[in-house]
Image (cartoon, rainbow, N blue to C red):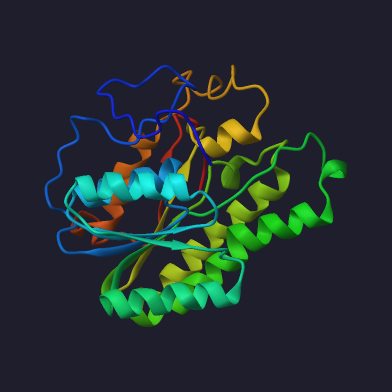
Length: 277
């Protein structure tokens, strides 16, 4: 997925819809993730790219799992390396078992163990009614957003030791639904339940599992999926959409020692859209 000037990191939030802000120029890293190793699915653009760059500024090496855009992935790699950290690029389709196995084998070969797994890959397709959602779309959305996430996490678990972190991207739609993203919202509700269930399951092993539930955030996926962006995010109390640079620091927090007593929780970054749960 491509977008103009995607790597721009202005100190002020840029004009809405022109390009995502990946990291603020005034964001100061403090080695919160020094010598950590992180895998980020969907890390080539948008929120995933912002997480990769923030992790790097905090001292972590990262591996980016991406499906298609070599240009986006190489841009992420460039931004990570600019921070003085290593960035592995692994291209393929997470829905395929053989590719998920390849990812684990590559990380095991390069790093032996893994400190942080960020499950961020996801898709959505806007449809105005349930009748317009095909079986093929339903299958693709569930396979990408939740089924592969569960399998991917299971495959990586042997590499994640005590103190490891698993962070999953869910959505505000998991809490309030969406009339035009019905199948997507259903998968994000499943991701929410996965976070809570896995957190309980892994607590004894001291592996912490948490999530981020973004609201409307400027990303290439949004620009491709919606026909009318003039009102995007305007229904939030802050009357605007957010930037990836405003979401990624929460992933840093959950991956760091600062969040050592938090598991099974979700941080809401949605411009004031109050939700329960």
